Length: 115
Length: 111
Image (cartoon, rainbow over all chains, first blue to last red; front, side, top):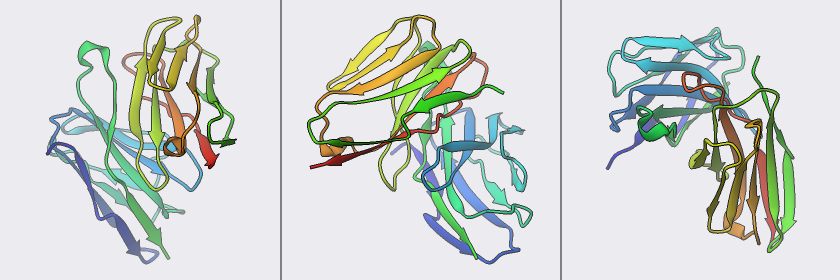
């Protein structure tokens, strides 16, 4: 069963703690993305990686960090420096643009609540 | 920076009425994708438009890409309760650029 998995679905943390969100894909996709979505809002890009061992900052990277040591995995760490970490976090992947397709596949998301 | 405007922000329609959402860019796009996100769910890819003036249909959904490749629309004919959700346009300015998501149009339906 191919796809993208994110765990856990819901995550609760105390302010001041770092927390790492998991994202795994078995689609053999090169590119992976992390987005943040606030209630009633669109998707904002945090970080993206187009190949293993390489990643770039998106529009709202401050307070976040990522790693891409394996093709299948792109974990996101929400650090204590992130001022408003409570949000819905979505991971996505995209394969090579074969036949000109740039479709992104999204995981089910993790809802992070920090109190 | 490169931005896209998506309107309207919300639309509440009677079941059976039509619905349209528009996506507008000030610069030419390479291609544009459309996604649907059900309440509490994650975005799901609907379609990609690449060619100037392209029109694609999926059952009751009609997608258009403007002649100048600066705007796009999604039209739903005779809405059903299963159409509820937020529709996002996601343009790319070049094949090498990242996707930018519009702010979305939230569709709600009165049965």
